[in-house]
Amino acid sequence: MRLFAQLGWYFRREWRRYLGSVCLLIIIALLQLIPPKLVGVIVDGVNTRSITPRTIWLWLGVMALTALIVYFLRIVWRILLFGASYKLAVELRGRFYQLLSHQLPGFYLRHRTGDLMARATNDVDRVVFAAGEGVLTLVDSLVMGLSVLIVMSIEISWQLTLLSLLPMPVMALVVKYNGDELHRRFKTAQAAFSSLNNQTQESLTGIRMIKAFGLEDYQSDRFVRVAADAGAKNMRVARIDARFDPTIYLTVGCANLLAIGGGSWMVMNHLLTLGQLTSFIMYLGLMIWPMLALAWMFNIVERGSAAYSRIRQTLEEAPELEDGSLDLPMGRGVLEVAIKRFCYPQTPIPTLRDVQLTLPPGRVLGVCGPTGAGKSTLLALIQRNFDATDGEIRFHGLPLTSVALDHWHRRLAVVSQSPFLFSDTVANNIALGRPDASREQIERAANLACVHEDILRLPQGYETEVGERGVMLSGGQKQRLSIARALLLEAEILVLDDALSAVDGRTEHTILQNLRHWGEGRTLIITAHRLSALTSADEIVVLRRGTISQRGQHQDLLQQEGWYREMYRYQQLEAALTAEPEGPEAADA
Ligand code: ADP
Image (cartoon, rainbow, N blue to C red; front, side, top):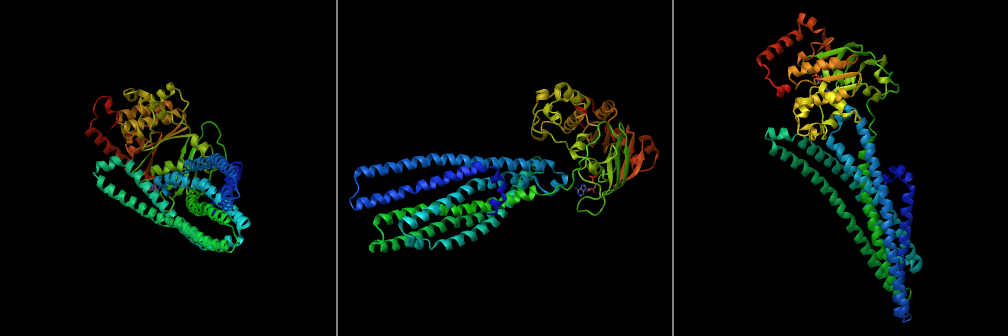
């Protein structure tokens, strides 16, 4: 029942709809009391032969009219009540998505996609069901149950009512116990559903890998195990679920037994007429639904409450970074990196130490170093996905921690190692950050990123659908498409995180030249494994074990003994041995 308090904010806001449907439910409950009363009157009339056929027809007509009115009112309350609950679904999903889109990478390290999807779909459905059906059953069972009880006690006999109510407290206890157990089991079942979702999502995303490794059977077995676990947990819920209705029917059966036993005794002792006993039994029949509804409500609300607590758990998760409030001044500014120490959450060992960089506008910085040296981490800090444990990064002299995050992100364009393409057209993928860009602007960006010719060769050119995650395109085409996407943003700082790795040397050279020309006055940060991408940088830093081990221009570094010279010579040799093939197809390495 906690759920109703938790959703109080929504009920208060949508009070008109809820009040409207509650009023209709009350009217329906009252109207439903009419037929049993009339049946009692007809039975007594027929029994004592004091009723005319005309009166019987009249009462039958009244009963039919009542049924018709109830029919229409039931349609209206459904529209009111369920309309309100579907609005809640839209709102909860909207909030959930907004929260997800504002979370930083740390959040996605803790949560898996399948689990988040389960919360946004399955759990929201449960809450919505509770806010619709749950409210209905609560109001209906209370209004209907209480009015039937009152009529039975006043109109017929309070003693007989009391007698037939004897089994109710036992039923209440059993329902309550089962409700608590259902809450626990349902939460476990939803968590199992999340795992199943994760498994499905990962299997489908990695399907090519699974096939390439011939792991179809192995993966199917794993899937079946997770599905069986979810099935078993849902079975545990179903076992508890199965106890609700029989408990109610048993209680109603006992109540009927007591009513017929006690009622017959009262009729024989002339304390009750036969018609009254008939009405009483019919009223008792009317009690079946409210009691079932009450048990059902416990069921729905416990499920809704378990689901809501899973959603809230995510919604209330505080972002690990505090957003700043300052606006960044317009225009180009100096980017200063002064990281003394950075450790990833839950790792005490620093990933970066003493990284000091000053990048005036227009500077091209190259970052290289062995795998795991901390290049991507440095870029993650510049993007403010994490904050330095000790030290800071400033732009325009303002520490990034004090600047509004989206202001900062608007100044950056990032091309990551593994670009993501949406299942949309090439043109829309390029225009992702600037949906209003003209075709000329899109083509210009594609030309700068040396992908225009490739796009023209696609079946529908810029209008070609690239398929999920860009399956239609090669690795190098995806990379160049995402460079075009970043260039279109015209941001002041362009970050290429090993974004040319799948492009051949000659195309890489052309793209870099284009960038230099395009990027006058813009800051460019490039990380690369292939050092040829960095040769024209104004400054190159070599990261080793999280700290800068060498820095300078290409020629300076070639003079020094160290990782850079060794790696450059090695890569030159390698390039000479694997000479590039000719032709446009060679654009992707
Ligand atoms: P590079 O880009 O130079 O290959 P990274 O910046 O990706 O290196 O990684 C630097 C180090 O930080 C590696 O040892 C890596 O294992 C570690 N690391 C990267 N991401 C995380 C993370 N999210 N949590 C903990 N450690 C991480």
